Length: 381
Image 1 (cartoon, rainbow, N blue to C red):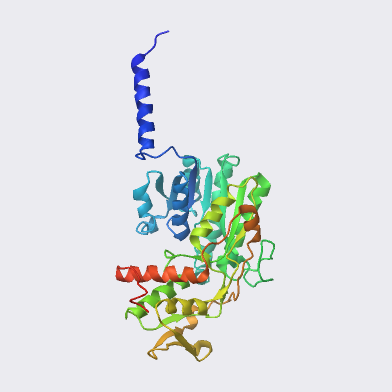
Image 2 (cartoon, one colour):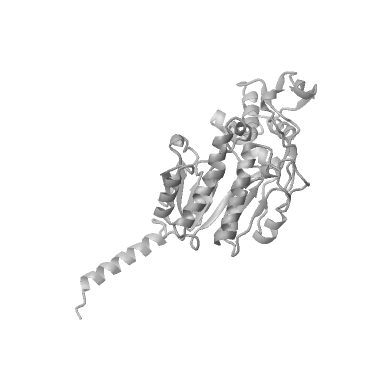
């Protein structure tokens, strides 16, 4: 038998170089798993990508061509890691979904893609159903026909909006659903079709019943960012009156970074199951408004009632909050409050950021965004 000394020497040199560069932190270790994220450009997609990359995953994100210029959240991750890759696709395109899944063979799939504006869903119900319901089915069916049932785990982003006209307070995984919007109805189909593929085909599939979760990178179309940006603009003299809808609607608000941790934990369990993820506290939109403005040293006094109610700056007497009926939903959801005991016990998960601190970091981030400088409590009493 002839021994190729040159080949052996080359292999030894390559192995030494790999070990040396890894030890020096100059190259990345081989990825431990591959994850595919639909809806990667959103708040949750960004934080989830960051989490998975920190765990040495190879992360594949899917974005629509219409979101070509909407990658500001994930651009830093793209520049930082060679393990993060983007693909064009749309979950309403079954062929594209199938191609991506067969090409990547992911260990984990996270479906965060959605038409997520509850109010807008009343105006575009068919599109909402195509994305939120049929889009989920397209992913599940692609896993099945690709013979990846035994390899791939699936996470479906469900929502507290399924509870709608709540049957009990607080809500748990066993609380009956009563959706009150086209968005929630479409998400209900996604919930049950995910459950069906788990029971019928043995797919490791989990529904995460996530209550409202916010952060400084929450979309500006959502009421929480609308409030924090509006408060900062008022403080800076860039805006006078902020118009809102139902001030007395109560929600269970948590921190998005905590909630993506729960998504990942669900897929690390031995047995697939559905989990409710919440902070366990509820607050009104009115409380959110008051705390956001107070963070900037502005106290609000309320006057009037109903659509005539307004918020007045105590110090100046200026009107800063108004009510606009167009922001009311055709069927309102008044109170959502989750009881996340199952997640506490089985996943060892808990919400780490309390409501006042969440509002504070969002206000401070928006102030910095608008001024290109950090918020200073001393300069803004």
